Amino acid sequence: MANGRTRIPFYRNVKILGVLAQSVFVMVLLIGAAILFTNVNSALKKSNLPADFTFLDDRAGIPIAESAIRYETDNTYLRAWVIGFLNTLKVALVGVTLASLLGVLLGVMRLSRNWLIRQLATIYVETVRNIPLAVQIVFWFTAVFTPIPPRILNPIELPGGIFFSNQGIALPWLYPTYRFAAWNSWLLLALLVFLGLFLWRRRQIWLADRPGNPWLLPLAVGLLVAAVGYGVVERSGNVLPEGIAADFLPDRGRGTVYLDADGNGRLGTSEHSVPFVSLTIGISEGQLETTTQNLTESKGDVNSTFRFPPIEEGEAERIEVGFASPVDAEGYDLHFLRYPSVGLVYQDHNANGNFDSGEELVDPADPTKKGFSGVKLVMTVSGFERTVIADRDGGFRVPRFELPGAEAQVEGGNANPFSVFRPTAAPSEAEGVEAVITLNKTGPLVLSRPEIPVSEYVGGIRLTTSYLALLIALVIYTASFIAEIVRGGIQAVPKGQSEAAKSLGLSDSQTFSLVIFPQALRIILPPMISQYLNLTKNSSLAPLAAYGELFVITSIIANQTGASIPAATMLIVSYLSISLSFAFVLNIVNERFALVER
Image (tube, helix red, strand yellow):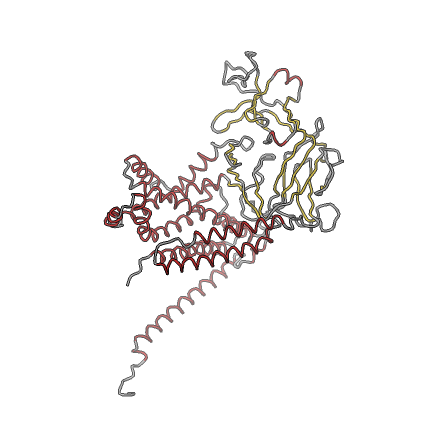
Protein backbone atom coordinates (compact mmCIF):
# COMPACT_ATOMS: atom_id res chain seq x y z
CA MET A 1 0.00 0.00 0.00
CA ALA A 2 1.32 3.47 -0.92
CA ASN A 3 -0.44 6.76 -0.05
CA GLY A 4 -3.51 4.82 1.00
CA ARG A 5 -3.79 3.06 -2.41
CA THR A 6 -3.27 -0.61 -3.12
CA ARG A 7 -0.87 -1.31 -6.02
CA ILE A 8 -2.39 -3.70 -8.53
CA PRO A 9 -0.05 -6.61 -9.41
CA PHE A 10 1.19 -6.43 -13.01
CA TYR A 11 -0.39 -9.81 -13.83
CA ARG A 12 -3.78 -8.32 -12.96
CA ASN A 13 -3.26 -4.92 -14.65
CA VAL A 14 -5.44 -4.80 -17.77
CA LYS A 15 -3.21 -2.28 -19.58
CA ILE A 16 -0.03 -4.26 -18.96
CA LEU A 17 -1.71 -7.52 -19.92
CA GLY A 18 -2.94 -5.92 -23.16
CA VAL A 19 0.57 -4.73 -24.07
CA LEU A 20 2.05 -8.14 -23.20
CA ALA A 21 -0.57 -9.95 -25.29
CA GLN A 22 0.08 -7.73 -28.30
CA SER A 23 3.85 -8.15 -27.89
CA VAL A 24 3.51 -11.92 -27.74
CA PHE A 25 1.29 -11.87 -30.83
CA VAL A 26 3.81 -9.80 -32.78
CA MET A 27 6.65 -12.10 -31.68
CA VAL A 28 4.69 -15.16 -32.80
CA LEU A 29 4.09 -13.53 -36.19
CA LEU A 30 7.79 -12.66 -36.58
CA ILE A 31 8.86 -16.16 -35.55
CA GLY A 32 6.36 -17.69 -37.99
CA ALA A 33 7.56 -15.42 -40.79
CA ALA A 34 11.19 -16.28 -39.99
CA ILE A 35 10.42 -20.01 -40.05
CA LEU A 36 8.53 -19.64 -43.33
CA PHE A 37 11.37 -17.62 -44.86
CA THR A 38 13.97 -20.15 -43.72
CA ASN A 39 12.00 -23.11 -45.09
CA VAL A 40 11.32 -21.40 -48.43
CA ASN A 41 14.94 -20.26 -48.73
CA SER A 42 16.33 -23.72 -48.02
CA ALA A 43 13.85 -25.34 -50.41
CA LEU A 44 14.82 -22.91 -53.20
CA LYS A 45 18.52 -23.57 -52.60
CA LYS A 46 17.96 -27.32 -52.77
CA SER A 47 16.11 -26.80 -56.08
CA ASN A 48 18.94 -24.53 -57.31
CA LEU A 49 16.51 -21.63 -57.79
CA PRO A 50 17.27 -17.97 -56.96
CA ALA A 51 16.14 -16.93 -53.51
CA ASP A 52 17.34 -13.30 -53.63
CA PHE A 53 17.26 -10.41 -56.08
CA THR A 54 20.76 -10.68 -57.54
CA PHE A 55 19.26 -11.86 -60.86
CA LEU A 56 18.02 -8.32 -61.51
CA ASP A 57 21.49 -7.33 -62.73
CA ASP A 58 21.56 -10.04 -65.42
CA ARG A 59 20.82 -9.42 -69.11
CA ALA A 60 17.07 -9.58 -69.71
CA GLY A 61 16.83 -10.34 -73.44
CA ILE A 62 13.09 -9.61 -73.31
CA PRO A 63 11.68 -7.81 -76.38
CA ILE A 64 9.19 -5.12 -75.28
CA ALA A 65 7.23 -3.46 -78.06
CA GLU A 66 6.16 -0.42 -76.04
CA SER A 67 8.36 1.31 -73.46
CA ALA A 68 8.11 4.69 -71.76
CA ILE A 69 11.90 5.01 -71.43
CA ARG A 70 14.84 3.79 -73.46
CA TYR A 71 15.10 0.02 -73.49
CA GLU A 72 17.10 -2.60 -75.37
CA THR A 73 17.16 -6.38 -75.04
CA ASP A 74 20.70 -6.12 -73.63
CA ASN A 75 19.41 -4.18 -70.60
CA THR A 76 18.99 -5.81 -67.21
CA TYR A 77 15.97 -7.50 -65.70
CA LEU A 78 15.62 -4.53 -63.36
CA ARG A 79 15.17 -2.13 -66.26
CA ALA A 80 12.70 -4.48 -67.92
CA TRP A 81 10.72 -4.60 -64.69
CA VAL A 82 10.77 -0.78 -64.50
CA ILE A 83 9.38 -0.69 -68.07
CA GLY A 84 6.51 -2.95 -66.99
CA PHE A 85 5.84 -0.77 -63.95
CA LEU A 86 5.72 2.39 -66.08
CA ASN A 87 3.49 0.71 -68.67
CA THR A 88 1.06 -0.19 -65.89
CA LEU A 89 1.10 3.39 -64.66
CA LYS A 90 0.40 4.62 -68.20
CA VAL A 91 -2.71 2.44 -68.33
CA ALA A 92 -3.82 3.25 -64.79
CA LEU A 93 -3.44 7.04 -64.87
CA VAL A 94 -4.98 7.54 -68.31
CA GLY A 95 -7.66 4.94 -67.59
CA VAL A 96 -8.69 6.54 -64.28
CA THR A 97 -9.02 9.95 -65.94
CA LEU A 98 -11.08 8.73 -68.90
CA ALA A 99 -13.23 6.38 -66.82
CA SER A 100 -14.05 9.23 -64.42
CA LEU A 101 -15.15 11.53 -67.24
CA LEU A 102 -17.23 8.85 -68.96
CA GLY A 103 -18.68 7.57 -65.69
CA VAL A 104 -19.80 11.01 -64.53
CA LEU A 105 -21.38 11.67 -67.94
CA LEU A 106 -23.27 8.37 -67.87
CA GLY A 107 -24.34 8.87 -64.26
CA VAL A 108 -25.85 12.25 -65.09
CA MET A 109 -27.50 10.78 -68.20
CA ARG A 110 -29.13 8.12 -66.01
CA LEU A 111 -31.05 10.93 -64.27
CA SER A 112 -31.87 12.90 -67.40
CA ARG A 113 -35.45 14.02 -68.04
CA ASN A 114 -35.04 12.95 -71.66
CA TRP A 115 -36.39 9.39 -71.96
CA LEU A 116 -34.10 8.39 -74.84
CA ILE A 117 -30.90 9.62 -73.14
CA ARG A 118 -31.92 7.95 -69.87
CA GLN A 119 -32.63 4.62 -71.53
CA LEU A 120 -29.41 4.65 -73.56
CA ALA A 121 -27.38 5.17 -70.38
CA THR A 122 -29.33 2.43 -68.60
CA ILE A 123 -28.76 -0.06 -71.42
CA TYR A 124 -25.05 0.79 -71.44
CA VAL A 125 -24.63 0.30 -67.70
CA GLU A 126 -26.69 -2.89 -67.44
CA THR A 127 -25.01 -4.45 -70.47
CA VAL A 128 -21.36 -3.54 -70.00
CA ARG A 129 -21.00 -4.31 -66.30
CA ASN A 130 -22.48 -7.79 -66.80
CA ILE A 131 -19.98 -8.79 -69.51
CA PRO A 132 -16.71 -10.14 -68.06
CA LEU A 133 -13.81 -7.75 -68.49
CA ALA A 134 -11.63 -10.47 -70.05
CA VAL A 135 -14.22 -10.95 -72.80
CA GLN A 136 -14.30 -7.22 -73.48
CA ILE A 137 -10.49 -7.01 -73.76
CA VAL A 138 -10.39 -9.92 -76.20
CA PHE A 139 -13.22 -8.34 -78.22
CA TRP A 140 -11.50 -4.98 -78.60
CA PHE A 141 -8.15 -6.54 -79.47
CA THR A 142 -9.18 -9.34 -81.83
CA ALA A 143 -12.44 -8.03 -83.30
CA VAL A 144 -11.76 -4.29 -83.53
CA PHE A 145 -8.12 -3.22 -83.48
CA THR A 146 -6.65 -6.21 -85.30
CA PRO A 147 -8.89 -6.51 -88.42
CA ILE A 148 -10.45 -3.05 -88.85
CA PRO A 149 -7.63 -0.45 -89.06
CA PRO A 150 -5.85 -0.07 -92.43
CA ARG A 151 -2.24 -1.10 -92.90
CA ILE A 152 0.62 1.15 -91.92
CA LEU A 153 1.37 2.41 -95.47
CA ASN A 154 -2.27 3.43 -95.93
CA PRO A 155 -3.07 5.10 -92.60
CA ILE A 156 -6.10 7.16 -91.77
CA GLU A 157 -4.90 10.76 -91.49
CA LEU A 158 -6.78 12.72 -88.84
CA PRO A 159 -6.63 16.50 -88.28
CA GLY A 160 -3.56 17.73 -86.42
CA GLY A 161 -1.09 15.31 -88.00
CA ILE A 162 -2.53 12.19 -86.32
CA PHE A 163 -2.18 8.77 -87.98
CA PHE A 164 -4.26 5.66 -87.28
CA SER A 165 -3.42 2.22 -88.67
CA ASN A 166 -3.01 -1.42 -87.65
CA GLN A 167 0.05 -0.34 -85.64
CA GLY A 168 -2.02 2.00 -83.48
CA ILE A 169 -2.26 5.77 -83.19
CA ALA A 170 0.62 8.22 -83.64
CA LEU A 171 0.24 11.79 -82.40
CA PRO A 172 2.47 14.88 -82.42
CA TRP A 173 4.23 15.40 -79.09
CA LEU A 174 6.48 17.94 -77.35
CA TYR A 175 9.91 16.78 -76.17
CA PRO A 176 12.66 18.56 -74.19
CA THR A 177 15.80 19.45 -76.14
CA TYR A 178 19.40 20.19 -75.16
CA ARG A 179 18.18 23.77 -74.38
CA PHE A 180 15.65 22.65 -71.77
CA ALA A 181 18.09 23.04 -68.84
CA ALA A 182 18.36 26.77 -69.57
CA TRP A 183 14.58 27.07 -69.08
CA ASN A 184 14.56 25.36 -65.66
CA SER A 185 15.24 28.58 -63.72
CA TRP A 186 12.27 30.26 -65.41
CA LEU A 187 10.04 27.27 -64.60
CA LEU A 188 11.13 27.46 -60.95
CA LEU A 189 10.37 31.18 -60.91
CA ALA A 190 6.94 30.53 -62.45
CA LEU A 191 6.23 27.92 -59.75
CA LEU A 192 7.22 30.31 -56.95
CA VAL A 193 5.08 33.09 -58.44
CA PHE A 194 2.13 30.71 -58.69
CA LEU A 195 2.46 29.55 -55.07
CA GLY A 196 2.91 33.09 -53.74
CA LEU A 197 -0.09 34.48 -55.63
CA PHE A 198 -2.18 31.44 -54.71
CA LEU A 199 -1.56 31.90 -50.96
CA TRP A 200 -2.18 35.65 -51.22
CA ARG A 201 -5.36 35.18 -53.24
CA ARG A 202 -6.70 32.52 -50.86
CA ARG A 203 -6.12 34.74 -47.85
CA GLN A 204 -7.73 37.66 -49.65
CA ILE A 205 -10.88 35.60 -50.32
CA TRP A 206 -10.95 34.38 -46.71
CA LEU A 207 -10.68 37.90 -45.30
CA ALA A 208 -13.40 39.15 -47.64
CA ASP A 209 -15.65 36.27 -46.53
CA ARG A 210 -17.03 35.77 -50.03
CA PRO A 211 -16.77 33.03 -52.67
CA GLY A 212 -13.94 33.22 -55.16
CA ASN A 213 -11.44 31.26 -57.24
CA PRO A 214 -7.97 31.28 -55.60
CA TRP A 215 -6.01 29.54 -58.35
CA LEU A 216 -7.14 31.01 -61.70
CA LEU A 217 -5.17 34.30 -61.51
CA PRO A 218 -2.01 32.66 -60.07
CA LEU A 219 -2.11 30.00 -62.77
CA ALA A 220 -2.42 32.59 -65.55
CA VAL A 221 0.48 34.65 -64.16
CA GLY A 222 2.64 31.56 -63.67
CA LEU A 223 2.04 30.44 -67.26
CA LEU A 224 2.86 33.94 -68.49
CA VAL A 225 6.19 33.91 -66.63
CA ALA A 226 7.02 30.49 -68.10
CA ALA A 227 6.10 31.68 -71.61
CA VAL A 228 8.27 34.81 -71.28
CA GLY A 229 11.14 32.65 -70.08
CA TYR A 230 10.71 30.32 -73.03
CA GLY A 231 10.95 33.22 -75.45
CA VAL A 232 14.05 34.60 -73.75
CA VAL A 233 15.81 31.22 -73.77
CA GLU A 234 14.87 30.58 -77.39
CA ARG A 235 16.31 33.88 -78.59
CA SER A 236 19.40 34.20 -76.39
CA GLY A 237 22.33 31.83 -76.70
CA ASN A 238 20.47 29.38 -78.88
CA VAL A 239 23.48 27.55 -80.31
CA LEU A 240 24.13 23.93 -81.15
CA PRO A 241 26.25 21.94 -78.68
CA GLU A 242 29.92 21.92 -79.61
CA GLY A 243 30.95 18.83 -81.57
CA ILE A 244 27.45 17.74 -82.52
CA ALA A 245 27.29 15.74 -85.76
CA ALA A 246 24.96 13.46 -87.69
CA ASP A 247 25.84 10.01 -88.96
CA PHE A 248 23.59 9.16 -91.91
CA LEU A 249 23.46 6.04 -94.07
CA PRO A 250 21.64 6.97 -97.30
CA ASP A 251 21.21 3.39 -98.49
CA ARG A 252 19.41 2.52 -95.23
CA GLY A 253 17.60 5.82 -94.78
CA ARG A 254 18.58 6.12 -91.14
CA GLY A 255 21.10 7.98 -89.03
CA THR A 256 22.07 9.13 -85.54
CA VAL A 257 22.79 12.52 -83.99
CA TYR A 258 25.77 12.32 -81.62
CA LEU A 259 28.59 14.26 -79.99
CA ASP A 260 31.79 13.65 -81.94
CA ALA A 261 34.12 13.58 -78.93
CA ASP A 262 37.24 12.40 -80.77
CA GLY A 263 36.59 14.52 -83.86
CA ASN A 264 37.14 11.67 -86.32
CA GLY A 265 33.81 12.19 -88.08
CA ARG A 266 32.54 8.70 -87.26
CA LEU A 267 30.13 7.48 -84.61
CA GLY A 268 32.14 5.48 -82.08
CA THR A 269 30.93 3.06 -79.44
CA SER A 270 31.96 5.42 -76.64
CA GLU A 271 30.28 8.49 -78.12
CA HIS A 272 26.86 9.52 -76.85
CA SER A 273 23.79 10.22 -78.95
CA VAL A 274 21.87 13.49 -78.62
CA PRO A 275 18.07 13.11 -78.42
CA PHE A 276 15.33 15.34 -79.82
CA VAL A 277 17.41 17.39 -82.24
CA SER A 278 15.75 18.99 -85.26
CA LEU A 279 17.31 18.08 -88.63
CA THR A 280 16.56 18.96 -92.21
CA ILE A 281 17.43 16.18 -94.66
CA GLY A 282 17.82 17.16 -98.30
CA ILE A 283 18.17 14.66 -101.16
CA SER A 284 18.78 16.08 -104.63
CA GLU A 285 17.43 13.10 -106.56
CA GLY A 286 16.37 9.58 -105.71
CA GLN A 287 13.82 6.93 -106.39
CA LEU A 288 11.59 4.52 -104.48
CA GLU A 289 10.38 1.17 -105.75
CA THR A 290 7.34 -0.94 -104.92
CA THR A 291 5.15 -3.63 -106.44
CA THR A 292 1.39 -3.97 -106.56
CA GLN A 293 -0.37 -6.33 -104.16
CA ASN A 294 -3.77 -7.90 -103.58
CA LEU A 295 -4.56 -7.27 -99.92
CA THR A 296 -7.23 -8.04 -97.39
CA GLU A 297 -7.61 -4.86 -95.40
CA SER A 298 -10.26 -3.53 -93.03
CA LYS A 299 -12.34 -6.68 -93.65
CA GLY A 300 -12.35 -6.13 -97.39
CA ASP A 301 -10.32 -7.03 -100.48
CA VAL A 302 -8.10 -4.37 -102.01
CA ASN A 303 -6.79 -5.43 -105.40
CA SER A 304 -3.96 -4.11 -107.57
CA THR A 305 -2.87 -1.58 -104.93
CA PHE A 306 0.54 0.05 -104.70
CA ARG A 307 1.88 1.89 -101.68
CA PHE A 308 5.03 3.96 -101.34
CA PRO A 309 6.13 5.45 -98.01
CA PRO A 310 3.95 8.56 -97.52
CA ILE A 311 5.48 11.65 -99.15
CA GLU A 312 3.77 15.04 -99.32
CA GLU A 313 3.82 17.03 -102.53
CA GLY A 314 5.34 20.01 -100.71
CA GLU A 315 8.35 17.95 -99.64
CA ALA A 316 9.80 17.72 -103.17
CA GLU A 317 10.26 19.95 -106.20
CA ARG A 318 9.23 17.21 -108.61
CA ILE A 319 7.57 13.80 -108.15
CA GLU A 320 6.95 11.30 -110.90
CA VAL A 321 5.36 7.87 -110.51
CA GLY A 322 5.53 5.38 -113.36
CA PHE A 323 6.02 1.77 -114.34
CA ALA A 324 9.46 0.19 -114.19
CA SER A 325 8.77 -1.85 -117.34
CA PRO A 326 7.79 -0.28 -120.68
CA VAL A 327 5.58 -3.29 -121.31
CA ASP A 328 3.60 -2.58 -118.12
CA ALA A 329 3.37 1.09 -119.07
CA GLU A 330 1.61 0.14 -122.29
CA GLY A 331 -0.82 -2.30 -120.70
CA TYR A 332 -1.76 -0.58 -117.44
CA ASP A 333 -2.81 2.81 -116.09
CA LEU A 334 -2.47 4.43 -112.64
CA HIS A 335 -5.24 5.72 -110.41
CA PHE A 336 -4.14 7.56 -107.24
CA LEU A 337 -6.09 7.22 -104.02
CA ARG A 338 -3.64 9.48 -102.15
CA TYR A 339 -1.18 11.19 -104.45
CA PRO A 340 1.62 10.30 -104.85
CA SER A 341 1.97 7.40 -102.42
CA VAL A 342 -1.16 5.23 -102.64
CA GLY A 343 -3.11 4.11 -105.69
CA LEU A 344 -4.31 1.34 -107.97
CA VAL A 345 -3.11 -0.22 -111.21
CA TYR A 346 -5.92 -0.90 -113.68
CA GLN A 347 -6.71 -1.60 -117.30
CA ASP A 348 -8.89 0.96 -119.05
CA HIS A 349 -11.30 -1.54 -120.64
CA ASN A 350 -13.80 1.03 -121.89
CA ALA A 351 -11.06 3.43 -123.08
CA ASN A 352 -12.66 6.45 -121.43
CA GLY A 353 -9.37 7.59 -119.87
CA ASN A 354 -10.72 7.33 -116.31
CA PHE A 355 -10.74 4.66 -113.66
CA ASP A 356 -14.05 2.82 -113.27
CA SER A 357 -14.90 0.39 -110.49
CA GLY A 358 -13.88 -3.15 -111.41
CA GLU A 359 -11.09 -2.18 -113.80
CA GLU A 360 -8.50 -3.05 -111.14
CA LEU A 361 -9.55 -6.71 -111.58
CA VAL A 362 -8.21 -9.06 -114.24
CA ASP A 363 -11.71 -9.43 -115.70
CA PRO A 364 -14.38 -6.96 -114.51
CA ALA A 365 -17.08 -9.41 -115.58
CA ASP A 366 -15.79 -11.92 -113.02
CA PRO A 367 -15.15 -10.14 -109.70
CA THR A 368 -13.98 -13.38 -108.07
CA LYS A 369 -10.69 -13.12 -109.96
CA LYS A 370 -7.86 -11.30 -108.26
CA GLY A 371 -6.27 -8.14 -109.61
CA PHE A 372 -2.88 -7.24 -111.00
CA SER A 373 -0.23 -8.11 -108.44
CA GLY A 374 3.54 -8.00 -108.84
CA VAL A 375 3.60 -4.97 -111.17
CA LYS A 376 6.74 -2.96 -110.38
CA LEU A 377 6.42 0.81 -109.95
CA VAL A 378 9.00 3.55 -109.48
CA MET A 379 8.65 6.95 -107.82
CA THR A 380 11.33 9.44 -108.88
CA VAL A 381 11.79 12.40 -106.55
CA SER A 382 13.86 15.54 -107.11
CA GLY A 383 14.64 18.20 -104.52
CA PHE A 384 13.33 16.20 -101.56
CA GLU A 385 13.54 17.98 -98.20
CA ARG A 386 12.08 16.90 -94.87
CA THR A 387 12.54 18.20 -91.34
CA VAL A 388 12.55 15.45 -88.72
CA ILE A 389 13.17 15.21 -84.98
CA ALA A 390 15.66 12.67 -83.64
CA ASP A 391 14.14 10.23 -81.16
CA ARG A 392 15.25 9.65 -77.55
CA ASP A 393 18.10 7.46 -78.84
CA GLY A 394 19.26 10.17 -81.24
CA GLY A 395 18.06 8.18 -84.26
CA PHE A 396 16.19 9.51 -87.28
CA ARG A 397 14.82 7.95 -90.47
CA VAL A 398 13.62 8.90 -93.95
CA PRO A 399 12.49 6.72 -96.89
CA ARG A 400 15.29 4.61 -98.39
CA PHE A 401 16.01 6.41 -101.65
CA GLU A 402 18.20 4.95 -104.37
CA LEU A 403 19.84 6.52 -107.38
CA PRO A 404 17.57 6.44 -110.43
CA GLY A 405 18.42 3.32 -112.41
CA ALA A 406 20.85 2.00 -109.75
CA GLU A 407 20.67 -1.48 -108.26
CA ALA A 408 19.32 -1.53 -104.74
CA GLN A 409 21.85 -4.03 -103.35
CA VAL A 410 25.01 -5.74 -104.41
CA GLU A 411 25.97 -9.16 -103.18
CA GLY A 412 28.08 -9.01 -100.06
CA GLY A 413 27.21 -5.44 -99.03
CA ASN A 414 25.29 -2.26 -99.61
CA ALA A 415 25.45 -0.09 -102.69
CA ASN A 416 26.32 2.97 -100.62
CA PRO A 417 29.32 3.12 -98.25
CA PHE A 418 29.34 4.44 -94.70
CA SER A 419 28.94 8.23 -94.70
CA VAL A 420 28.94 10.92 -92.03
CA PHE A 421 27.42 14.38 -92.38
CA ARG A 422 27.94 17.43 -90.21
CA PRO A 423 25.70 20.51 -89.96
CA THR A 424 27.68 22.22 -92.75
CA ALA A 425 28.33 19.09 -94.77
CA ALA A 426 28.35 19.14 -98.54
CA PRO A 427 26.47 16.57 -100.59
CA SER A 428 27.88 13.07 -100.45
CA GLU A 429 30.48 12.34 -103.07
CA ALA A 430 30.15 8.62 -102.55
CA GLU A 431 28.27 6.40 -104.97
CA GLY A 432 24.61 6.66 -104.04
CA VAL A 433 22.03 9.37 -103.42
CA GLU A 434 23.30 12.84 -102.63
CA ALA A 435 22.14 14.02 -99.22
CA VAL A 436 22.73 17.09 -97.08
CA ILE A 437 22.03 17.08 -93.34
CA THR A 438 21.43 20.40 -91.58
CA LEU A 439 21.10 20.48 -87.80
CA ASN A 440 18.60 23.17 -86.82
CA LYS A 441 18.66 25.35 -83.73
CA THR A 442 15.73 24.75 -81.39
CA GLY A 443 14.22 26.11 -78.21
CA PRO A 444 13.73 24.26 -74.90
CA LEU A 445 10.92 22.20 -76.46
CA VAL A 446 10.49 20.73 -79.91
CA LEU A 447 7.34 19.41 -81.56
CA SER A 448 7.91 15.95 -83.00
CA ARG A 449 5.42 14.91 -85.68
CA PRO A 450 4.89 11.26 -86.64
CA GLU A 451 6.19 10.05 -90.00
CA ILE A 452 6.15 6.68 -91.82
CA PRO A 453 9.55 6.39 -93.54
CA VAL A 454 9.35 2.64 -94.23
CA SER A 455 6.76 0.48 -92.48
CA GLU A 456 6.47 1.86 -88.93
CA TYR A 457 5.81 5.10 -87.10
CA VAL A 458 8.76 7.38 -86.39
CA GLY A 459 8.48 10.53 -84.31
CA GLY A 460 5.68 11.85 -82.14
CA ILE A 461 4.17 9.55 -79.54
CA ARG A 462 2.81 6.12 -80.46
CA LEU A 463 -0.01 4.19 -78.82
CA THR A 464 -0.07 0.56 -79.96
CA THR A 465 -3.25 -1.36 -80.70
CA SER A 466 -2.55 -3.57 -77.68
CA TYR A 467 -2.46 -0.54 -75.39
CA LEU A 468 -5.59 0.95 -76.95
CA ALA A 469 -7.54 -2.31 -76.68
CA LEU A 470 -6.64 -2.74 -73.00
CA LEU A 471 -7.26 0.92 -72.16
CA ILE A 472 -10.65 1.17 -73.89
CA ALA A 473 -11.89 -2.07 -72.34
CA LEU A 474 -10.86 -0.95 -68.84
CA VAL A 475 -12.38 2.51 -69.30
CA ILE A 476 -15.70 1.27 -70.68
CA TYR A 477 -16.02 -1.45 -68.03
CA THR A 478 -15.05 0.71 -65.04
CA ALA A 479 -17.17 3.66 -66.22
CA SER A 480 -20.31 1.52 -65.92
CA PHE A 481 -19.69 1.10 -62.18
CA ILE A 482 -18.69 4.75 -61.70
CA ALA A 483 -21.93 5.78 -63.42
CA GLU A 484 -23.99 3.96 -60.77
CA ILE A 485 -21.92 5.53 -58.00
CA VAL A 486 -22.52 8.99 -59.47
CA ARG A 487 -26.23 8.32 -59.91
CA GLY A 488 -26.58 7.16 -56.33
CA GLY A 489 -24.58 10.11 -55.00
CA ILE A 490 -26.74 12.65 -56.83
CA GLN A 491 -29.98 11.00 -55.71
CA ALA A 492 -28.71 11.01 -52.09
CA VAL A 493 -28.69 14.83 -52.00
CA PRO A 494 -31.94 15.99 -50.35
CA LYS A 495 -34.56 17.39 -52.70
CA GLY A 496 -34.81 20.48 -50.57
CA GLN A 497 -31.38 21.58 -51.83
CA SER A 498 -32.55 21.85 -55.44
CA GLU A 499 -35.80 23.50 -54.39
CA ALA A 500 -33.90 26.08 -52.34
CA ALA A 501 -31.57 26.77 -55.27
CA LYS A 502 -34.48 27.30 -57.65
CA SER A 503 -36.17 29.61 -55.15
CA LEU A 504 -33.05 31.79 -55.37
CA GLY A 505 -33.47 32.01 -59.15
CA LEU A 506 -30.70 29.59 -60.16
CA SER A 507 -31.09 27.79 -63.47
CA ASP A 508 -31.03 24.00 -63.78
CA SER A 509 -27.37 23.97 -64.86
CA GLN A 510 -26.39 26.35 -62.04
CA THR A 511 -28.33 24.27 -59.53
CA PHE A 512 -26.55 21.12 -60.61
CA SER A 513 -23.01 22.53 -60.87
CA LEU A 514 -23.09 24.83 -57.80
CA VAL A 515 -25.39 23.03 -55.36
CA ILE A 516 -26.18 19.40 -56.18
CA PHE A 517 -22.96 17.97 -57.60
CA PRO A 518 -20.55 19.50 -55.00
CA GLN A 519 -22.64 17.90 -52.24
CA ALA A 520 -22.85 14.62 -54.14
CA LEU A 521 -19.05 14.49 -54.38
CA ARG A 522 -18.85 13.84 -50.66
CA ILE A 523 -20.85 10.67 -51.20
CA ILE A 524 -19.27 9.72 -54.54
CA LEU A 525 -15.55 9.93 -53.70
CA PRO A 526 -15.14 7.05 -51.17
CA PRO A 527 -16.55 4.29 -53.44
CA MET A 528 -14.82 5.90 -56.46
CA ILE A 529 -11.46 5.20 -54.81
CA SER A 530 -12.26 1.49 -54.85
CA GLN A 531 -13.07 1.63 -58.56
CA TYR A 532 -9.76 3.35 -59.30
CA LEU A 533 -7.94 0.59 -57.47
CA ASN A 534 -9.96 -2.04 -59.32
CA LEU A 535 -9.01 -0.51 -62.68
CA THR A 536 -5.33 -0.57 -61.73
CA LYS A 537 -5.42 -4.21 -60.62
CA ASN A 538 -7.54 -5.26 -63.59
CA SER A 539 -4.72 -4.10 -65.87
CA SER A 540 -3.08 -7.44 -65.01
CA LEU A 541 -5.35 -8.89 -67.73
CA ALA A 542 -3.02 -7.24 -70.26
CA PRO A 543 -1.79 -10.61 -71.68
CA LEU A 544 -5.20 -10.93 -73.38
CA ALA A 545 -4.26 -7.89 -75.48
CA ALA A 546 -0.55 -8.77 -75.87
CA TYR A 547 0.43 -5.66 -73.91
CA GLY A 548 3.66 -5.75 -71.92
CA GLU A 549 2.77 -4.35 -68.50
CA LEU A 550 3.91 -5.21 -64.97
CA PHE A 551 2.24 -8.62 -64.65
CA VAL A 552 3.35 -9.80 -68.10
CA ILE A 553 6.99 -8.76 -67.73
CA THR A 554 7.26 -10.03 -64.16
CA SER A 555 5.88 -13.41 -65.27
CA ILE A 556 8.45 -13.58 -68.08
CA ILE A 557 11.24 -12.73 -65.61
CA ALA A 558 10.05 -15.47 -63.26
CA ASN A 559 9.94 -18.03 -66.09
CA GLN A 560 13.39 -17.15 -67.45
CA THR A 561 15.21 -16.94 -64.12
CA GLY A 562 13.22 -19.40 -62.01
CA ALA A 563 13.00 -16.73 -59.31
CA SER A 564 9.29 -17.22 -58.74
CA ILE A 565 9.23 -16.14 -55.10
CA PRO A 566 11.28 -12.92 -55.55
CA ALA A 567 9.33 -12.06 -58.70
CA ALA A 568 6.00 -12.60 -56.94
CA THR A 569 7.22 -10.42 -54.07
CA MET A 570 8.12 -7.64 -56.53
CA LEU A 571 4.69 -7.94 -58.13
CA ILE A 572 2.87 -7.74 -54.80
CA VAL A 573 4.90 -4.75 -53.61
CA SER A 574 4.38 -2.97 -56.94
CA TYR A 575 0.59 -3.27 -56.93
CA LEU A 576 0.50 -2.37 -53.23
CA SER A 577 2.55 0.77 -53.83
CA ILE A 578 0.31 1.90 -56.70
CA SER A 579 -2.89 1.15 -54.79
CA LEU A 580 -1.72 2.82 -51.58
CA SER A 581 -0.58 5.89 -53.54
CA PHE A 582 -4.01 6.22 -55.15
CA ALA A 583 -5.72 5.71 -51.79
CA PHE A 584 -3.44 8.23 -50.03
CA VAL A 585 -4.02 11.02 -52.55
CA LEU A 586 -7.74 10.43 -52.92
CA ASN A 587 -8.27 10.18 -49.16
CA ILE A 588 -6.72 13.64 -48.82
CA VAL A 589 -9.12 14.92 -51.48
CA ASN A 590 -12.00 13.20 -49.71
CA GLU A 591 -11.10 14.91 -46.43
CA ARG A 592 -11.12 18.31 -48.16
CA PHE A 593 -14.67 17.70 -49.41
CA ALA A 594 -15.98 16.24 -46.16
CA LEU A 595 -18.42 18.23 -44.04
CA VAL A 596 -16.89 20.03 -41.05
CA GLU A 597 -18.99 19.10 -38.03
CA ARG A 598 -18.95 20.48 -34.52
